Structure formats: C-alpha cells, structure tokens
Image (cartoon, rainbow, N blue to C red):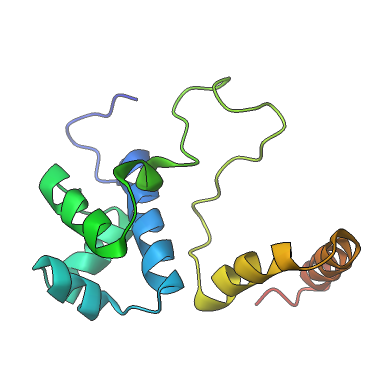
Length: 135
C-alpha cells in the first residue's frame, strides 16, 4: 500500500502492530511504563508505538517480542494488505476499537464456556449494542 510523502495518518501496518503490542501488554497486566522501561523507551514513546504514530524499529520490535515472550509473527497476525488472501468468511480486523482489559478477558474466558452459553452471551452483547448500551 503506497502512501504519499505528505500523509500524516499512521500506516495500517504500524497501527496493527501497535494494537497487537497493546493487546498483549494489557493481557499480561503490564502498564505502558513497565513495558517501556523493559525495552528502554518512555511510556510516551510506547503510547506512540501502540497508536501507530511512530513505527517500531525491527530491533525494538525484537526486544518487545522477547520481553512479552511472543514471536515476531504475533504482531502481524490478523493483518492482510491484499483482498482475497484472508478467508472470505473471516471478518476484517477492526482497528477502530482499542482493546481493553475487559475485552481481552472476555476473549480469554469465552472459549472456556460451552458453545450454547457463548451464543447466549453474544446475543446479549448484540442486544445491548442495539439498545445503545455500548457507551
């Protein structure tokens, strides 16, 4: 995906990688300060990484992956820059809603429930969104 020199918006790959860093950090219960300190950057820099405002260099991504105990491919999972490479039935990765501790916990706990209860919870969440309770 080509971008002009004057484009100020973060590149979709940078946003995706930053979001994956954020999701993993929150999943481990780490603050931006703690992760930043572990890899030698300020929490402000970590904020910029997570928003995709600043690109994470290869060496810094390696340090982050090492500290979070994940492989480099983890940060790119779920991203496809070309239509047709992902399964047709797979939903697009949603970058507009940042992960929260609660959403990550929901995602972690849901597979432990029987399928019938997962469907009930999903239905309840959809109803809540329709009622405007998604604030």
